[in-house]
Image 1: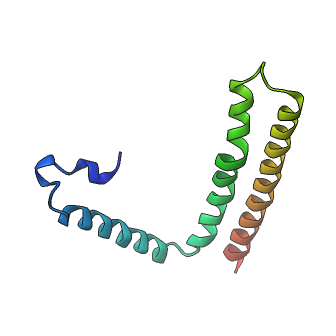
Image 2: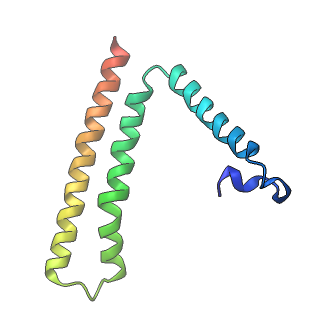
Length: 107
Protein backbone atom coordinates (compact mmCIF):
# COMPACT_ATOMS: atom_id res chain seq x y z
CA UNK A 1 0.00 0.00 0.00
CA UNK A 2 1.37 3.38 -0.94
CA UNK A 3 0.87 6.61 0.94
CA UNK A 4 -1.07 8.06 -1.97
CA UNK A 5 -3.71 5.36 -1.54
CA UNK A 6 -4.50 6.82 1.87
CA UNK A 7 -5.80 10.03 0.29
CA UNK A 8 -9.60 10.15 0.68
CA UNK A 9 -11.51 9.42 -2.51
CA UNK A 10 -13.09 12.88 -2.46
CA UNK A 11 -9.61 14.42 -2.95
CA UNK A 12 -8.30 12.16 -5.74
CA UNK A 13 -8.84 14.75 -8.45
CA UNK A 14 -6.64 17.24 -6.62
CA UNK A 15 -2.98 16.45 -7.25
CA UNK A 16 -1.81 18.72 -4.45
CA UNK A 17 -1.92 15.87 -1.90
CA UNK A 18 0.18 13.59 -4.10
CA UNK A 19 2.68 16.39 -4.68
CA UNK A 20 2.88 17.13 -0.94
CA UNK A 21 3.42 13.45 -0.09
CA UNK A 22 6.16 13.05 -2.70
CA UNK A 23 7.85 16.29 -1.68
CA UNK A 24 7.83 15.30 1.99
CA UNK A 25 9.34 11.90 1.14
CA UNK A 26 12.14 13.52 -0.86
CA UNK A 27 12.84 16.05 1.91
CA UNK A 28 12.86 13.34 4.59
CA UNK A 29 15.29 11.27 2.48
CA UNK A 30 17.50 14.33 2.10
CA UNK A 31 17.48 14.95 5.85
CA UNK A 32 18.38 11.31 6.59
CA UNK A 33 21.16 11.41 3.99
CA UNK A 34 22.62 14.60 5.44
CA UNK A 35 22.39 13.62 9.12
CA UNK A 36 23.78 10.08 8.95
CA UNK A 37 27.57 10.45 8.61
CA UNK A 38 28.20 7.61 6.15
CA UNK A 39 24.78 6.96 4.69
CA UNK A 40 26.25 5.71 1.42
CA UNK A 41 28.24 3.01 3.19
CA UNK A 42 25.19 1.86 5.12
CA UNK A 43 23.23 1.73 1.87
CA UNK A 44 25.99 -0.30 0.21
CA UNK A 45 25.84 -2.78 3.10
CA UNK A 46 22.07 -3.10 2.80
CA UNK A 47 22.34 -3.31 -0.97
CA UNK A 48 24.96 -6.03 -0.95
CA UNK A 49 22.87 -8.11 1.41
CA UNK A 50 19.39 -7.58 0.04
CA UNK A 51 20.02 -7.10 -3.67
CA UNK A 52 21.90 -10.35 -4.04
CA UNK A 53 19.33 -12.13 -1.90
CA UNK A 54 16.36 -10.90 -3.93
CA UNK A 55 17.92 -11.13 -7.40
CA UNK A 56 20.25 -14.13 -7.34
CA UNK A 57 19.52 -16.34 -4.35
CA UNK A 58 15.76 -16.42 -3.77
CA UNK A 59 14.45 -16.91 -7.34
CA UNK A 60 16.37 -20.12 -8.09
CA UNK A 61 15.80 -21.36 -4.54
CA UNK A 62 12.05 -20.84 -4.93
CA UNK A 63 12.15 -22.44 -8.36
CA UNK A 64 13.84 -25.52 -6.94
CA UNK A 65 11.43 -25.58 -4.02
CA UNK A 66 8.30 -25.29 -6.16
CA UNK A 67 9.32 -27.67 -8.95
CA UNK A 68 11.13 -30.11 -6.71
CA UNK A 69 10.44 -33.36 -8.56
CA UNK A 70 10.17 -31.95 -12.09
CA UNK A 71 13.57 -30.26 -12.24
CA UNK A 72 16.16 -31.82 -14.51
CA UNK A 73 19.78 -32.26 -13.45
CA UNK A 74 20.92 -29.43 -15.72
CA UNK A 75 18.30 -27.05 -14.31
CA UNK A 76 19.18 -27.98 -10.73
CA UNK A 77 22.89 -27.55 -11.45
CA UNK A 78 22.36 -24.14 -13.04
CA UNK A 79 20.18 -23.02 -10.13
CA UNK A 80 22.81 -24.13 -7.62
CA UNK A 81 25.51 -22.29 -9.58
CA UNK A 82 23.42 -19.09 -9.60
CA UNK A 83 22.77 -19.43 -5.86
CA UNK A 84 26.49 -19.97 -5.23
CA UNK A 85 27.41 -16.90 -7.29
CA UNK A 86 24.85 -14.89 -5.30
CA UNK A 87 26.19 -16.08 -1.97
CA UNK A 88 29.81 -15.37 -2.95
CA UNK A 89 28.93 -11.93 -4.35
CA UNK A 90 26.91 -11.07 -1.27
CA UNK A 91 29.75 -12.20 0.99
CA UNK A 92 32.34 -10.08 -0.82
CA UNK A 93 30.01 -7.07 -0.96
CA UNK A 94 29.14 -7.34 2.71
CA UNK A 95 32.79 -7.73 3.70
CA UNK A 96 33.75 -4.72 1.58
CA UNK A 97 31.00 -2.55 3.03
CA UNK A 98 31.74 -3.59 6.61
CA UNK A 99 35.47 -2.97 6.20
CA UNK A 100 34.81 0.52 4.81
CA UNK A 101 32.42 1.28 7.67
CA UNK A 102 35.02 0.07 10.21
CA UNK A 103 37.67 2.17 8.46
CA UNK A 104 35.45 5.27 8.67
CA UNK A 105 34.71 4.61 12.35
CA UNK A 106 38.43 4.44 13.16
CA UNK A 107 39.22 7.78 11.54
